[in-house]
Image 1 (tube, helix red, strand yellow):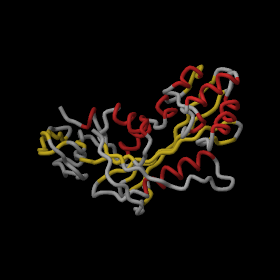
Image 2 (cartoon, helix red, strand yellow):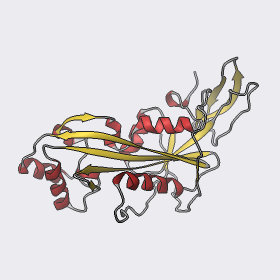
Image 3 (tube, helix red, strand yellow):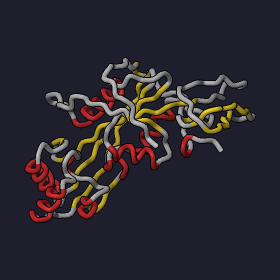
Image 4 (tube, helix red, strand yellow):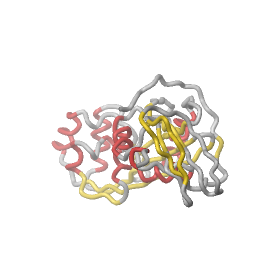
Length: 263
C-alpha cells in the first residue's frame, strides 16, 4: 500500500553528480522490510529480510571492494495517480509526497530544458528523510515546436486535440532522482494520432479525461482509440518512463529487484 505523508515545501540542496555511480552488485531492500541480516557470497553481498519496515539507505562495507548493499526508501514527488500506478506495477515500493512547483516556462526555454528543470525542482522541494531517494518528473507534448502542457479549459483542450489530429507528436518526460546527488535524464516517444472529427473531439473533451493531462489526452484511457502507433516508451506517454527511472537509480547505486525483495 502506498502511504501519503504530509508534504513539505522546504527545499533540499542537491549536488550535481560529477559522474554516474557504480552499479550496485548487491540485491537491495526497500521500505516495507525489516530485520535484515547480511549474507555474503564470493561474488555479491545478499540481503535476506523478514517482515516489517526498514527506512533509510545504508552501504554495508563488504570483504571485497566490489561488494556492497544499499537499502533505500523511495519517495515519489508527484500527485499524479498514473505515475504511482506505473511505479507500483514495476515492483517499486515508495511513498508519495506530492509537490507543487511553478510550471511557468521561461522565455525561449526549450521543451527539453523545461521538463528537466521541473523534474529537478520537484526533487529539491522535498524534505528528504535520512537516506531516502526522491523521484521527480514532468511531461509535455511537443508539436510544431510548441510545447503543449495541461489545458486551462475545455476550449484549449479542443484546440490541442485538433492540432494533434492525424499527425505525429513527441511526448517528452524529464526525470530526476536524488539523494545527496542529483541525476536526470529525458525520454522521448513519438505518438501518431488518427484523424479526428469535430464530433470525436467534442465527445472526448466532454468526458473530462483531457483535463490535467499534458497534450489534453490520456493514452491509457479513452484516448487509446485515437492512437495509431507509438515509437518509444509507452510508460513515458502515460507519464513516467520506468526504464529511465530504473537506469538512474542504478547509477545512484540502487538496483531494485522485483518488489525490492530478496528471495
